[in-house]
Length: 64
Image (cartoon, rainbow, N blue to C red):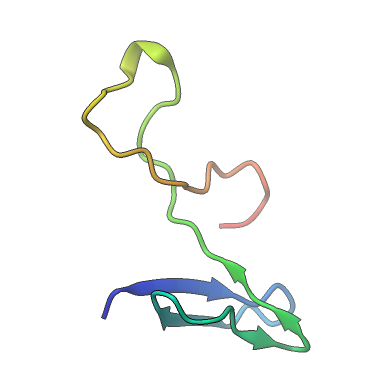
């Protein structure tokens, strides 16, 4: 099943839902999208035109 994984900021519960469905609610608030850790450098010298640049968690927000 391909989908997106969301995390509750209050209880840290995770839920994967199919692509296109509404954002799930947990603990009375919408869950936030959990991003994968970044694995590519972010500078022009290492950029590749044919590599997809998907959103990722760069680790600067304090969330694992």
